[in-house]
Image (tube, rainbow, N blue to C red; front, side, top):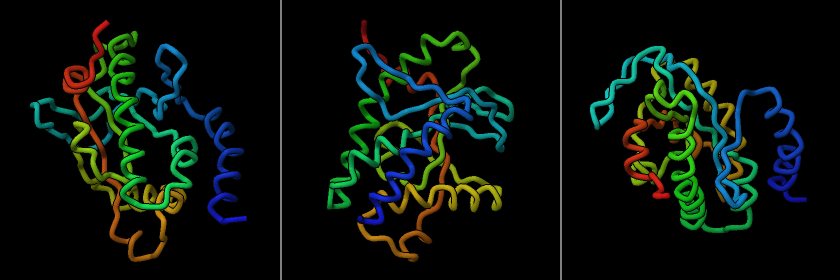
Amino acid sequence: MDLRLYILWIWKIWDPIYYSFTRLQYIEPAGNKKTVFRVRLTKYKGKEVILSDGTRIRKNDVLLKIHLHNVRLLSEILNVKHELNKGRCIYKMVLYSMPVLADYIKNHPEEQKIKGIIGITMINKGVRHLGFECFFPENIFYLWLKKVSQLPTFFLSTSTMNVQNFKKHNPVYLMMSKEHLIKKYQTVV
């Protein structure tokens, strides 16, 4: 059995257990089509950030933390051979999920408190086209912890795994203000 298939198989077993211990929630659009996001509210703990639209994100501001549903995403791209095609597949799945995310925030009971969305990833090509802004975590310990924790995702998402490729990628925060998200992705009902 291919090592990637074995790792993905174990991850599929582990994922529901992990999910049950987190405060993550699935967001589902009408029609039961799956999105690639799982989310939870969080309080921002980093240094103050000013987004390009002027939104200030300060310590303890409420953000919607987005997590990619990696098992689902990686299962979809496992048989895609070329890196560029893998990137396109991931981009399209995230793009499809963004209007659902905007609707989720607009209809959230605490919508008024939410200042924006935040995520952290090592796979960040194309995120600016989606409307995200990238910021590097300043805490070196946290940066390395995230890098190690994202190793399986990175390994499964690349066609060729080598140490040099892993070393040159670092986790980044992805942020977007609530207003920018809704303006860019709001669905008209």
